[in-house]
Image (cartoon, rainbow, N blue to C red; front, side, top):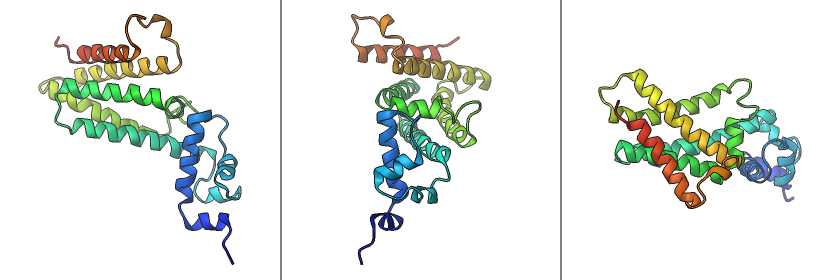
Length: 204
């Protein structure tokens, strides 16, 4: 007797299928209306099957957010290990984040502005945020080998605030009116990131 599709998924990668379907849903519709039942229907399994992998909606959203953080972490790790100068490293990291925000705006919202981060950030996400912060500190420590850790921390805070704020405002279409119209939009990104890097590395 041929196994049903639901039974087959128990033997294959149901968790992976659910996450891929969830990522697609978030990219297209956002996370607010995503449910475990919706994903079960999209991959063709019984409503109860996903609960073997995700105990509730929050754990599903958390898994999707973690995938986004892991992707950013891979970008950052690759960049800081590429043998670039501190300026080049910071610029590449800034461009990567703004690019990620542009290509996956709804996933970024789930990662930074959702029930997973309010009223407090989920402890699992804090771990990934710490990884990103550590990667950001490395080029700054390289640029200021004798620098005070508090000063380096403030520089990283200022840089990250600028990059995240710019990416977030751009994602929400809140700064289109004030972006210079005579400058190509991709050049606007490059220049804003370059200015943030210059400020972070500027000697006192």
